[in-house]
Length: 272
Image 1 (cartoon, rainbow, N blue to C red):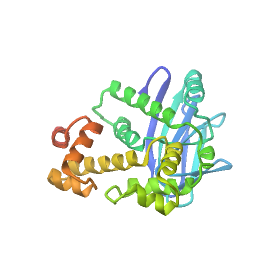
Image 2: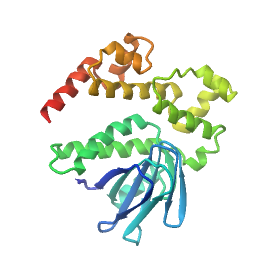
Image 3: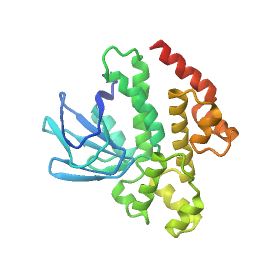
Image 4: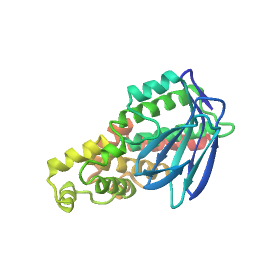
């Protein structure tokens, strides 16, 4: 459990199978935050929510003491059971544009992914993480979500080619090593490069090129952590054109070289 004056994380986890999951409130001012990684249809109480990849929903417990989330088909969502003060909720709504019962887009899924890796251990028994780290991670996550919510999915769906752009973004993160040439994408959509850039930025708050790099960085971090493959092989498997470009982008986004990152990960595994 992570407790602060304004917002507290009571529980978190993920659902990877279809079916129902019930969440029970703990006292008052409880909220359920759902973040979807794939396209899914969720039914909460008497309403259906059509979730696109990289979207989130903030739902209040209100007067009832439980919320049941139903997913009929393949699903992947992460949940955070939160308790917030009225002042913090007002900040989310007025400053961040996050409205209850509305689906919002996540502009920086890679950053959210990294924060999730920090938050999840706090819900496990005998974790060795410092409370301060958990508090900072929770606050950072909420800040990222507030930056992502420049309009709900319902408004974003008014953007031309929105469904195709969403499907494209999901494929980029699912297949980072593929050859993602912007001109080929534009040709498939039948639009110009400047127009594509404008639409993509309007829909997700970031560019397609930045998403491609972010997805490849995430892929490289996993390979560096889980394998002993040479840096050159990792670079090639993740879709980077050259080793030099890979190392430059990695240090820019992660803050250290691939070799240093592998060393840190290896030391952490030995310690655990």
